[in-house]
Amino acid sequence: MIRAAVVTVFLVIAVTIVTVAMLLGTDTPLGGFLANLGTEIFGIVITVAVVEYFFERRRLQDRAREIAWSILHGIEQGIWMWQGGPRRMGTDQLLGLAVSIDSSDELAPYTQSQLQSLGDRTSQILQRQRAAIRSVGGLEEALNDLTSLKSLGEDAGRADASRTEIRMIAEILESSTTGLARVLGQPDQRIPGALIRYRDPSLEAQERRHLETRPHLVAEARLAEGIQ
Image (cartoon, rainbow, N blue to C red; front, top):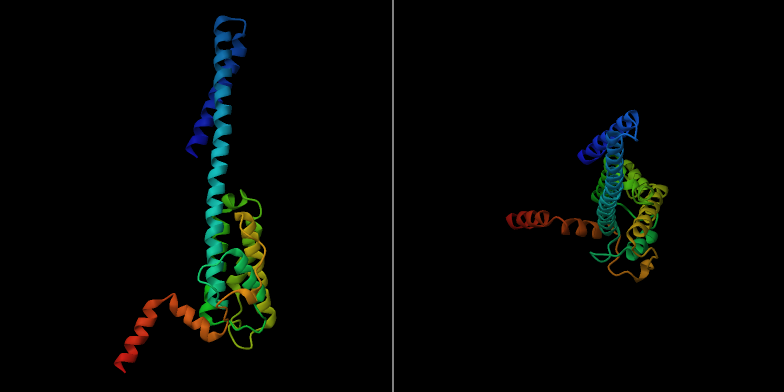
């Protein structure tokens, strides 16, 4: 912002000098000198402005990629909590699990909360980092769908949850993962879910994974058992 203001000030100075030169007449010694000076300053200002533009664009793109990686890790955490699989997965494995989500899969309350939090965080980032996000093609589209997760229905975690809503969540995760993979230059072809180890979307498995991410809950439960 400060650099842009400095460039603007020098641009005004250059235009003022050239204007004065024109009024004095460029055929006069002073007028010719001011015309040359104004032209030189104008050339420098334009060069600096162009360089500044490319630096700022690069900064925004770097920030956009940081956002993309952060959201992709959030998707990874949500899918892992729900469907299982390796603790660290590539986009091809994430896509395989997302496509494998069945409309009859149950969604534990803490898993639902994880996905809602991801949707809410994505919505806030879209509002606050719009310039950075728009500097990388395809990123805004990849993030837009995720914002729907913040309004998951209260009944999405029940055993009789709407199959349509579960299917919608799966499609959102698949679409956004595909978009982010392309933005980040990661694989966008999925591995068949049947080939992915440790997949287990049961409520019991979701609980185990939830506790795995919160070791203090495990310690508290063991302490309570010991007391009893």
